[in-house]
Amino acid sequence: MRTAVFGGSFDPPHNGHLALCLFARELAGLDRLMVSVSKNPFKATAAASDDDRAAMARLLTREINSAGAFAEMSTWELQQPGPSYTIDLLRHVAALHPGDELVLLVGEDSYRQMPQWKSAPEIPKRCSIAVFGRSGGETADPPVNDHLFPAHHYDFDMAVSATKIRQRVAAGQPIDHLVPPSIAAYIAEHGLYRS
Ligand code: ATP
Picture (cartoon, protein in one colour):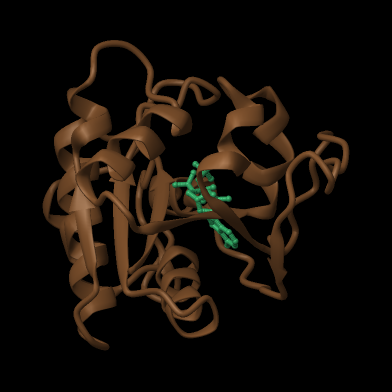
């Protein structure tokens, strides 16, 4: 089985995440996808609570699975003490699904940060890496050494980010074109991201 791991803050999940997962299923030949809600040590405190981010990530997996079931949501990282690191998640998934080939799904911005991640050299030994282009993703991070972090790069171009969505909600602007309907409804019902 080819099992993909897709970690994120999902604060909130959006159409970029949804499209990336559907695209990955077809192009990377995935059998299974774990969507893992993280406590990202590189990000400032989350805007929504862990419970709300997990609930929205669950809605994301439902949206993904409406095109054929293969995704599940994991709160394993949230249950760990302290910050969560991708290498620990990969070890956890390897133990859960022994013998599976693991594929780590990341956007270009995350891939550029990978050399700074905990136990970074071990990551490509544990999984293959699938990188999705990130439109408008100006970043100060230098390109990654392809020999140290070999990756398959997919052309991908969706100019949506969770930051933009939080800003739009705070400004009272619509977000219906940026998130799946179930997640737009959850944000409205729970009053998330209002200033
Ligand atoms: P924020 O704006 O709060 O930084 P985000 O939109 O980057 O959030 P995350 O939950 O941090 O969302 O992203 C999880 C993963 O999805 C990361 O690997 C990120 O690079 C990737 N990703 C998110 N949005 C896109 C996008 N539009 N195109 C490609 N990759 C994306």
